[in-house]
Image: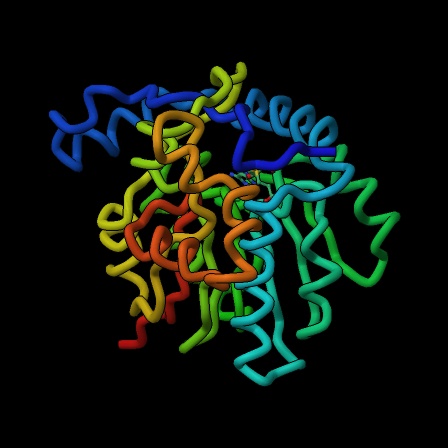
Length: 271
Ligand SMILES: C[S@@+](CC[C@H](N)C(=O)[O-])C[C@H]1O[C@@H](n2cnc3c(N)ncnc32)[C@H](O)[C@@H]1O
């Protein structure tokens, strides 16, 4: 079972230390040229999803899922066509299925084969999302948790999601919050074949805005592995305080963008 992600050390510190000195064009170019092959990435993710995710879920993922399900619930629809991009071991897909027909896709072919046996009511399609032949304008909702930071062409990733959404379709995205992971968390080294390009709030907004109208963008799950922040974000401390203060401390920290995750709900631009 994956351990509590607030003390999760899988993610490494910043591997892109020159990023502040690059223009957006240079950064995008560096991302494209430095990428491992799709086969190398697939091999890495097969191992990662198979080894870490087949059991339970950590707090970070639990909260991401909770918000996505709240967003879907608020829409009031049960007849959606939903695509989960980078669904990993497929754990969220059966929950999404409460809101319509679900297709889950991921590079991890081995893991998806097992997911297909386990959840036959979901269609799992293995492959590189950027080149899989889904029909344009065919999904009401695209959900994608912790995938953006692991693709080589982040602008292309956003564009592809927008292409697949129906007019007015919704993207529900979770991604690592760069300043929190880079400056306050201890993270594991990059694995062979693994890509990692975290974004901050403004970079995420800039990536989405050409294709989407942003409806909500906020951070969740305050996290730190060092210093005073570690104490303030500790789940034990928060659990002790919550009978008196409710979630006020957590909410205040999230409002300061101390959350491990950035959550984005955005509607496809029309016209
Ligand atoms: C950090 S994992 C997150 C998995 C899952 N969403 C979760 O939260 O458990 C990133 C996932 O993105 C998938 N991924 C990365 N690049 C991809 C691509 N080009 N096409 C499809 N999936 C991709 C990986 O296979 C991996 O499962």
